[in-house]
Amino acid sequence: MHNIIFFGNSLTAGYQLRANEAFPALIQQRLDSLKLPYKALNYGVSGETTAGGRQRVASVLARQPVDVFVLELGANDGLRGIPVRETTQNLQEIIDLVKLKHPQARIVLVGLEFPFDLSAFGNHQYGRYAADFKASFRTLADKNNVAFVPFLLQNVLGVRALNLPDGVHPNAEGQKILASNVWAVLQAVLV
Image (spheres, rainbow, N blue to C red):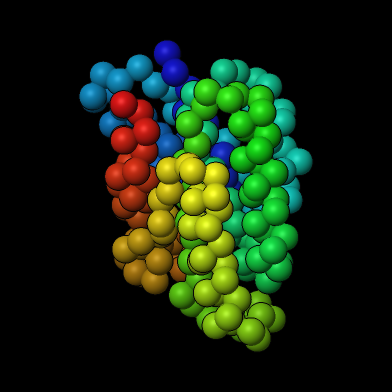
């Protein structure tokens, strides 16, 4: 059995949902239906920033063999207006540690965007920040030659029927779309 580590924040954890409704569990269902020898392990922590992930990743990597590492962090950095340079550096350090500890592991980087107005969070340079934030994920993926999910929340963000009342976290139906968005890239990594 091969391990797929889903390392992320509330989007991965399935905030306010049952464990079997989070997208890593939905991907496990696909793996099982296809009789693929992979176990999806959900290491999503609600509220996690890239700095928190950087501090936490070593203990996760030490727990079990890692065959595929799906990195989904950055949304909370964006909501806090943390400089893109800092977010990028933290993500790079996580990728570096995965490569060091598990050189055979295939890595999938999950991209995020902020098409909504961040000024409510005190970020008045919204347009430039949002553009830099979005671009940083593809740049990191290209630099590290890793698989890339362009936008985790594609077809979910801003769709009221697919989100919890907070308008930020996907509901169970939204998580199904997240699973499809990730699976579109992940399936090629598994063969």
